[in-house]
Image (tube, rainbow, N blue to C red; front, top):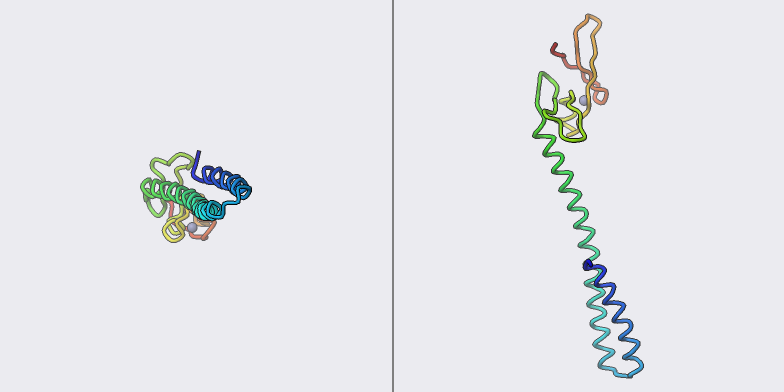
Length: 134
Ligand SMILES: [Zn+2]
């Protein structure tokens, strides 16, 4: 059971205790229960906030880990990048250097041949053309 669920159970228990104490007409007991209830309510809100922060941090860590794996696998050949070896879920390329270096995005380039039959890579995102080595 997580902290958030434990706080829910504690808050329910305090509500029952308040009902019981109310019938016993004990002012001191009611005051103490109200204090404990307020403290648990604050801790409950903190636990919810911490749980959300933890989820976000785990997501950020996974993203950073994937980005690091991609950067480590990136290999420059000519004026394009390849992933050697490609991490799971990725193809090996080739990728646009400009988009990778500037925008930190892997954009696949496509083969292109100029009107005078020179092979090039073309990036459809930034529209850059670079020589393709045969
Ligand atoms: Zn590009």
